[in-house]
Length: 88
Image (tube, rainbow, N blue to C red; front, side, top):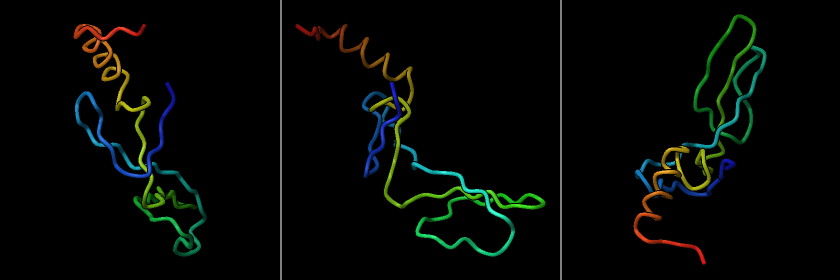
């Protein structure tokens, strides 16, 4: 199941864990501060470049569709089946 991107922070329907920020990594030379429209969440410096973690300020992601992990997706499905849910 692919990752799913949301425009607001949602929670896992099984365990209630909140979705993580959908971030990207950006490598740049040590030539000054980042200039762009994304928020710098983390900055890690090496000897010749900075590695930035960037977030657009509104996107969140769940690892497994609507669920935080494969385990939560499986538990939710098993619990639904045990409760009598059947697809006809």
